Amino acid sequence: MERTDEETFPEELADALVGVQRLLRRRLRAGLTVPRLRGAEVELLRLVESRPGIGVSEAAKELHLAGNSVSTLVNQLAKEGHLVRETDPADRRAARLLLTEQAEARLRDWKQRRVALVGRQLARLDTAEQEALRAALPALRALAVTLQEEAEES
Image 1 (spheres, rainbow, N blue to C red):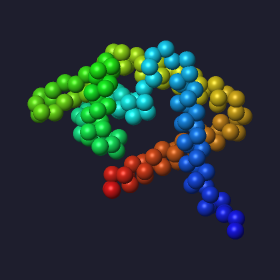
Image 2: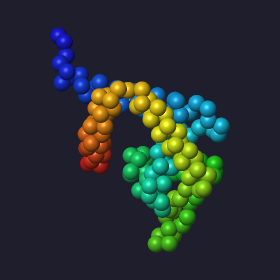
Image 3: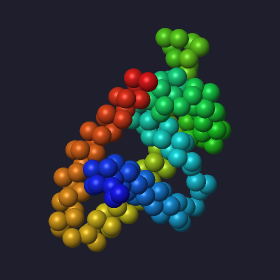
């Protein structure tokens, strides 16, 4: 029995999103002159960039990772000169995370290269395909919100 579009769409969408993300990561790694960061490390740095001073436990919750996993990431990124841990003045037992200038420069470079890569590939698509992707952005953002909400409920 053949599956209907409605049955295959969730899998096709997930596969397409994963495929695009995987190809972006691979293409952005090419030509790096510094050791590459793992996905979780980049996610943590981007979170700290968007929320300077975030604590380790809050970062773990946001990233849906175990606290000890985030602590390990923080230790590694601090050792590599990407993160600084400052004592939280409100709770001396807690640390607040901040990016170093090195990490800020690295994220800035990564974003510029990612925008350039995606921009080049979008330019290769026809106008209708570009508009379809633009029109899909609100729905993709809404999907991300529902995934986040469900994760927080569990």
